[in-house]
Length: 142
Image 1 (cartoon, rainbow, N blue to C red):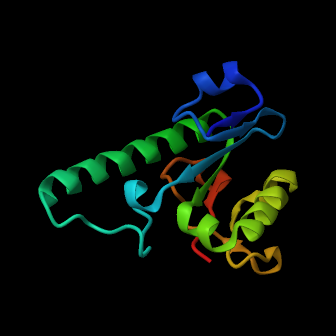
Image 2: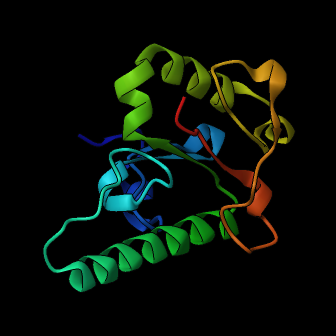
Image 3: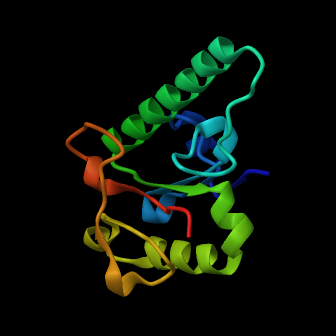
C-alpha cells in the first residue's frame, strides 16, 4: 500500500517512494529484505535454483535502489529506508524513530538510527557516493 500526500509529486520522484512528506522534503522507502538485499538479514536468502539469474536480478534491484536514492538526494529530498525485518520485529519502535526523523531538524537527520533511541546516534555510512549522501540514512535491523 502506498500512502502519499501529493500524488503529482510522487509520480515525478525517482523510485516512487512508498511515503512522501513534501512539507518535510522527506521520502520513505519500505524495502523487503529479500528483494532489496538487506545485508546480514536472515530474510535476504539466496534461492538454490538458478543462482546466476538471481544474483543478476538482485544486483539490478540494488543498483536501481541506489540510483533512486541518489536522484532524490540530488533533488534535495531527505531519504530513509525502512527494512521489512524491522517492521516485523519492532513496528512501534520503527514508527517512533520515523516520527522523530521526520520532525527533527535537517542537521539531526544525517545519522543512522539504531536500537530505537536517538541519544546514541552516530554518523551513518553513506548510501551513495553523491555529495548529498549525508542526507540519506537507513534504519538498520534492531
